[in-house]
Length: 275
Image (cartoon, rainbow, N blue to C red; front, side):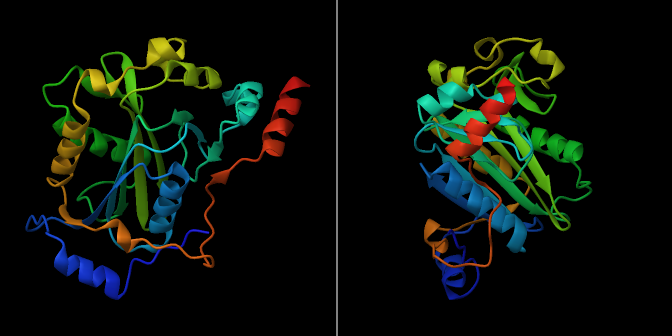
């Protein structure tokens, strides 16, 4: 079980040793960057930070490992997945702790997460639409002059094609906004996903391949990540932390909601759908 130690001597030492990006007057935000961190571990980290940390965080994970399906907290496998294909090909399925839709992620997906105290962004009401609007302001800096970028029904799009899907969770004192950016994707993986019954109006019943686009066609990968950090630095005073600030242990009182669905659960969902 994942355990997160963010306080104490280790973090204090890191704060003194690691170069800081300071903007006077802006709220402090810890920045952690990973490459290829397994998506389950990333989501566990995010969930624990949301529940237990009193600080603001930005997490960037450049790709994950094997293709993995990630569903929102209330997602129903029988409605969202081609379960027989998922089971046959042994594609892992995760139910995350936030809302939002279903996505299949792999090493070509870039993840960006903001975890903020409610007072961190001045005048921002801690509700889904204001948070989405704030995120649009931030990413408009990243994509300034590139494509026809805008926020459309909670998706990041170029023109009429989606390349970024968002999910959120709001607690008493904090909120999280995380995004999966489709840098690239394997066409074959899209076949594991059904067309959702609840879809944005602008999708117009288009299939996956007619609905999404690749970020790589608009911007180099490293430039996107650098520009995202730069844009975050206009809203926060960033403090970089090394990944060693996160340790694992076998025992912890924190029990994440995010988990893999078992084959038995998927089989039961498929059987129920077939009735």
